[in-house]
Amino acid sequence: MSTGRVTQVFLASTLYGTATLAAALDAGAFPPAGRRILLTSNHSLTPEITPGIEAMPGFAALRTRFDEVLDWNAVTAPQHPSTWAPRPDDVPMWERQLRVLWGLGEDRVELVVESLQVPPAQSLCQLFPGAAIDVYADGLMSYGPTRFRLDPQIGMRVRRVLHLDLVPGLEPLLLTEFGVRAELVPAPDFLKVLAELAGLPDQPAYAPGEPGTAPALLLGQYLSALDLMSAVQEEELHVAMVRGAVGRGHRELVFKPHPSAPAAYCLRAEAEAERLGARLTVLREPVLAETLYQRLRPALVVGCFSTGLLTARALYGIPVARTGTADILARLAPYQNSNRIPLTLVDALVPELAREEAAHEDPADLPGLVTAVGFSMQPRILAERRAEAEGYLVRHLTERTWRYFKRRRLTTLGLPGGIPAQLSFLPRSPAVRRVVHRLRRGLRRVS
Image 1 (cartoon, helix red, strand yellow):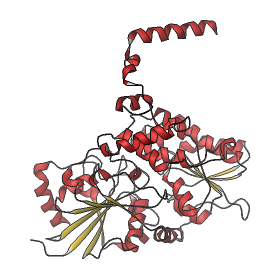
Image 2 (cartoon, helix red, strand yellow):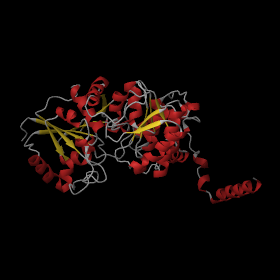
Image 3 (cartoon, rainbow, N blue to C red):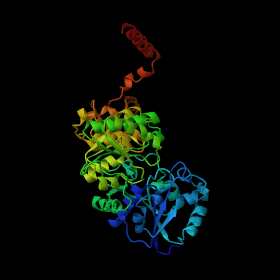
C-alpha cells in the first residue's frame, strides 16, 4: 500500500543530460516530491576503469538539485548497464530488492529517463511497472522516431518528452506513436545552469596567443567507435577541420576531443595546424562543449554532427560550420540508423566549412523533411505519418534533398522518388545486370 510520498528517480549517463535535468528542475518542470534520486549510469566500454559523470568537473554543482546520488552500475554489476535487462518473471523480485536497497519503502515512484528504447532506461522502467515515466532528450536523437517498437505497457506510461529548443519550431518525433506530448526546457534556465559550470575554478588549459583573440573551437566525436568511419578517416576529418578553420582566417584553434578518444587521434591535426602556421591547443579536461562556449567565447565552432553545433547556433548565437556529414550520410547503414536524424539536421541547418560553400539557406520545410526521413526510417512505428512523408517528397525531393534518402528505401516503401512498381523488377533482373556490365566494360575499353 502506497504511503502517499513520491520519490522521483532521475537516470543520467552524461553531464549534458544532468545539466538538462537541473535546468528542468530549476524551471519547475517537476512537481514537488518527498525525495529526488539522481541515478547515474556509466555506459563506457570499460566502466570499471573509466570515470563516470560523478568525476567530471561541474557535477558537484549539478547534484545539489537532488537529495541523493546512486550508482546504477553497482546494481547491474558484473553485467554492463547497456545490455542488462531483467527477465519478466524476475521483475517483482527486483522491484522489492530495489525498494529495500534504495530505501523506497511503499513510496510512489516516478521515473525520468533518457533513451527509453534501450537499457538501462528501459530496464529501469520494467522494474517499476506502476511508475509514471517522463523522458528527456540528451541531444538531437529525440527529433527522430522511436528506434524500436516499444511495449505498450511502457509507452502508455510516458507523460511527456522534455527537450531543449535546439531547432526552434521543430518538435520531436520520439514516442509520438503513443500521443506523448513534447515540452520545452526553457533555454534561460539551461543557460543559467551552464553558466554555473563555466564559473568553476578549474579553467581549461588554454591561453589565447594574442589578447582579445577568439579561437575557433573544433569538436571531436569519436565516430570510429560507433563504426561510422574508420580511425584513419576520423583523423582525416580532424585534419579537414583544421584546414577549413585556417582557410576561414583563424590562426587560434582549440580542439576538444571526445573524452573516450585515444590521444593519438589529435596528432595529425596538430601537425597540420603547425604546417599551416596556426596554433592548435588540445583540451584534455572532460568538460562540456557548452562550458567552453561560456569560457572561450569562440569565433567559430566546427564539428561533424555534434549536438554542440546546434547548441552553439540556437542558444549562444555562435557561428558554426560542419564537415564530413555528406560522406557519412552516403554510407550510413542501415537506413534506420538512429544517427540519421542528427546527421540530417546538422547537414540541413549548418553551413559547410569549405569557404566556397559558406553561404547557406535553411531548408524550406524542415519539419516535413524530418517527418519524411523519420517515416522512411520507421514506417511501422510512424504509420500515421505516411501522407505527410509523401507530400514532402512530392514537393521537395530535389538534387539538394536527395542526400537524405535512398532510392531503394523509397522503392521498398512505395514512396515518391522510388522506382515505379511496374519497373521494380529491373534492379533484380539478371538480364538487365548483364547488359549493364557489358556497357561498363565497353566504356572502359573506349576510355
